Image (cartoon, rainbow, N blue to C red):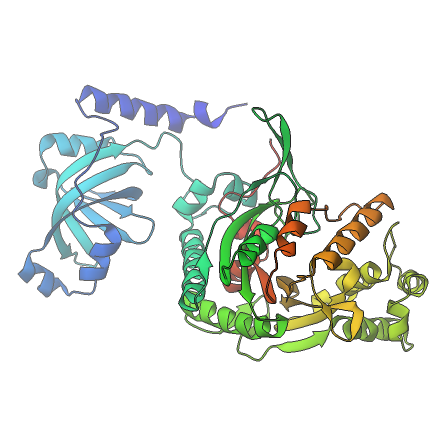
Length: 500
């Protein structure tokens, strides 16, 4: 079987590289003095007429990757791209030094070159550089995908993102939009008095989320360590320390399954606001998403699949148990009472009637949330705050004043995806210890995803934490929404892939 490296194209490209060396050309020079990027040239002069360009006689010096090579007798053309824009380069033997023209004859699709010349328009009105100098900058030894076919193999796009960026301009645009979205988030929070911080990614205890961690080992200290599943407990330690508004844009790692919405390594925004509760965070989250959409997209309405979605406030608000009752009642054709979701036996019986398996250790609250995820999530297309979660599944959240089985927590759903999770923070150290101990009991009963008992965090609460609310927003999923992407791998530059 012939490999890419053994193909005729590769052999010819290597032969061209050796011929360049014989000409005395440095095939990988250290630098190139570029006056302007291709994008800057196109932006500044691409709108000028042929007459304006001829009168101004503008010379430039730029560089890029060769995206096309065409020859028509004495007229030869290159198309150079810098990832943001493209420009045509006109090559004539009588306009170049002899050595430079010999370099041109040894160029391959994908090589990097620098050019110097005058801007003009061809007879077909194409904006072009008439080259007076040509410098070789780097050889592309492996053939790129044919430009008219593009790169449609998803596996290759994710494994070799550099190829995706070279041949698919929309890939570059997607990640530029992601960058704008992250910048907008940062500017929004800083403008409202939030301080950006960094917290540990290697932790002695995994905390802040009900998730399975990645485990590693520190050789010098001879201790096990865990990759961060969430920064929450460290950020709330800072609230204890008196930082009233704090946020982190962080990388998290969860050793769990992979899907269109889940990658083991992902990016979150978490922020905490002293003296606020979860209703304040609903309003702030609405404002944040509208601002980010306008900064990144220029609009607060977007298309996701075949659905038009509006991010204009106010978002719909829906109690979790009410959503489950309504969905289960529709499915079964009988009225489901709230009491069916509060007692373990009744909740398990309801799940069985719905064909949902209950695993050992699940109490009524966990069963209720499982039913919600199976029956309700996909229906939440327009932005919806699902609020008031069972205490059992929310070990870090503050209970409502009139119902100890319910906490002040919401999740934001858009296009059937959970985008945010937020709650009024539990700041009673005795109650926090009791919740942690209940998590340990659930683990002993067979439930895998439980929270460890973090003694230092309880100690921090014993020094006193003011009333506060905190939220986490999944940046990858938010970018999926903004870019109409239906796999999280589309919006992560280098998603985790199974080794070949």
